Image (tube, rainbow, N blue to C red; front, side, top):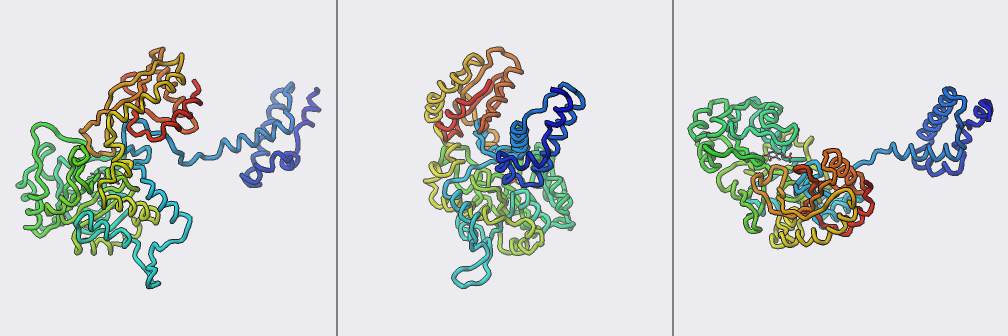
Length: 465
Ligand SMILES: *Cc1c(COP(=O)(O)O)cnc(C)c1O
């Protein structure tokens, strides 16, 4: 065909827009976006023809298909579920704790309906969004008072800003930790408007060090549970009990940032012991902060428990309004706390505890059930074996304690890094991405956190190598 007739073959914008096959696209993406996209695609056709006189303009139907598929491919995917087989139970990048079913139901119920968030149904008067949680948290921690914010970082910010604005806060040098990307105790302290007074040395801090750091400017003594690392060897730290005596002698409050914070004795489940929130309060801490989505196994939230006097000041800080949790967080956290009233059910009903305590036999059985599906999916590309390995709690919880586990180990037949990366990439490109961990030139899939065996088998059938 001549170049001229090719030019005539380029359809008008209207002709594409009125094509019946585009109807669905128009409804989904709206006429403004679709029209500008059609213009762009037609302009591309003109450009191609200008550059190459032999270029053949496709039929309008093909152009319509191109518009539809390119518009769809430009849609952001948003949050999407994945398989976390990294071996890190509380993986911050993968959304930390998985909610129990009761919490999922509660979230979905309040998400799409009006609810009594700040409304007292019996009296028909204004209510308090925290009252739904307050009694439960007081019962489970033994605290006098409580407040909830968006995460533990917010809990610290609020405590420090309320109790120590423009004043000094004493913290051990061994506890000036960085947690994750951008959360460092010294930085949160300066943003809270406080002056950090470093106490002792990195590896050893004694009670006298705190005593000599206290001045008339001191507002608070703070102890940070160094949950994501431990200094080994010649070390010494001061207990919260000794610190609380010192603080109270100087009429200062003691704030303990527990980080992960647990409400039950984890040793009961065969896990490494961590001080419970109740124990830390009993040791004399005036305020304790902890996360909702670490060992507690709930939604992202920060909890502050402590004395009535301190919490009533904290709740009056205008920042509280900026940091308050939403209805879905409150609904989920309430359900999670309800499970803690009967700790015997945690091992079955709370995913975080269930995954942390899953027996080696059960994990091994899961691996046995999946070996064949993995081998089949990777045939000709990699060898697949079962391997003993270690999982970890993650998010700074129980940092030094490795949990024995069983993983599926993938070794590429061509033992190159690019082959390994290609296989790991193929698992990530599955409709529901499967995320493992790279270790010593192998790709490991830890089965401790796998609940949906059948779902994973289905995905493996779609693996493209
Ligand atoms: C995780 C952690 C935090 C931050 O908690 P988020 O809920 O993630 O904001 C603060 N302090 C310590 C000791 C932690 O381990």
